[in-house]
Length: 115
Length: 113
Image (cartoon, rainbow over all chains, first blue to last red; front, side):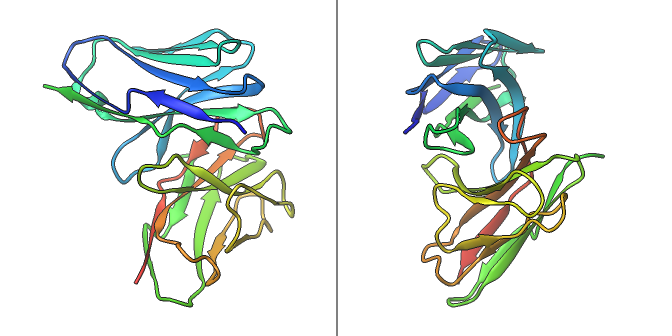
């Protein structure tokens, strides 16, 4: 059964720093990997979707990479701002028969950007 | 504006009651999903639907039921058989199952009194 792990569980950095969030998954048979942002008490906002055939995706100050063979993805946030403070979730869509029929989520990285 | 709406935002249930959570999307997506989020745990899939009049159980379907009579609507009923229903419930949709981004609604927080 697919398992998704996110490290670190929590991170606090000063404003302006570049930072990397890590995501690993145990089964490389995935259709895609998606990064989300969740603010307290709110739904999930999709940040980036990487198809299994892709290596990376970029949106503004965000860059996500995917190494399917090693079961890893990273989310790079450049020039962090206090407004980036949120929980970041990584999720993979398993290929059929992998034991899951929707997204399998990690528990998230709780990010605080200090002004 | 295209998107997903969920109602109500907060819901309180007494012991033994069934309650229904609403999810509506105007994105013209075929696939819809229900997830449950508990503190300290990742989101877990309850039910999903690939197309109208079709739905399948996810990882934690016991005590829940769904219907998909219209493309844009996928309501979730939390029955009295669900022993620990207090959680944050999130509805999502995608163009088709396994294809494209999943977009999420704002969530419903259910509390058992």
